[in-house]
Image (cartoon, rainbow, N blue to C red):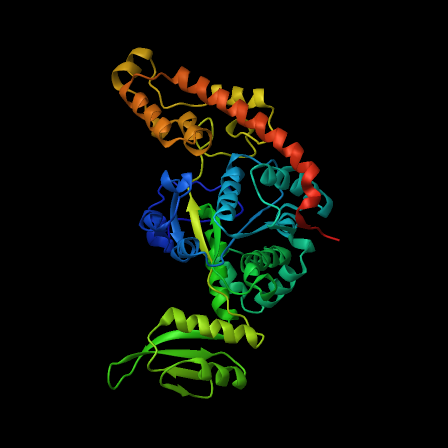
Length: 437
């Protein structure tokens, strides 16, 4: 593979289409028509890819239970890149999802060397306050990895199903990688699978909205979900007749569980020592539902592989990558509103060198960080955004007017957001937040 996806470094992906072929990510436009009232990021193709999002769209349409899960490593200032993820969490919650947000303090401890106290301070002061200010509802669960017993217990169990060779292949780990770093990876997988534990309602579709650099976590977790399950359902073919049928394979499953499953499957079935051949029940999804019910009743796991969406990265305000180590390249949600507006006015545009050239040739909004701010964050109305784009392309809109508009909107957004953050601080007790003891 030519593209490297690293969850712990600032990724620079120039050709998102390569991810479809190299990592098996599906184009999001194919599932877009199935989504009721799609999010702005979906409509504008900012979300470009997915894994298994069809099951999430179906749950939204039918009212079936589903969850959204995501996490934030408390390593620095909360910025517009984090806002993108928070916006998607809040939208899914509004669409009926039960929401889970993990503060990845175990990851920050192992990868950044931060103290538990520093992780807690950054987690609350930066991420949790902004998440609530952006609309996160109190019925969701917010937790620090180090304080969540169900995540830690599940991470330990998951660790028994993955070895160093697999982690090395997925993440590039070497002999220099610390054990706690590897444990933090198992913890992230537990974060993603936790919403399907029995105490939270049992197996259900879960979506994780991420940037493509986080896809290694999803690939690992999807594999672990299958390894942990009591049963797996396979499509098979009779070598003699060529007839296709379904088979439920039990991995060290209790005989009683197999016998109970046999009773519930309609039609002709054959029970063997460790599997059941289903000969007259072609409904794959119906069979998988039965299998999950029995597995949970007998104390086993029945995880549905997590779905995911993938969004484009924002570029830096000066072009190139957005980086927390380059303050002028990004805007933090806690920046002074006037400072935020100044950063916008200094940002790189897609305009021509001279005014005359701009009027004659038009600008390049696809190369303009100011237009990108409006596309991603500052303008909700699609028609208004399209008008700005067309005026830019035709040469009737100059960069100065765009910068002024974006700067004013950024100032107003930051001012409003920070006022809501202070309200959120007063409302913290209303939220389910699990801290490290």
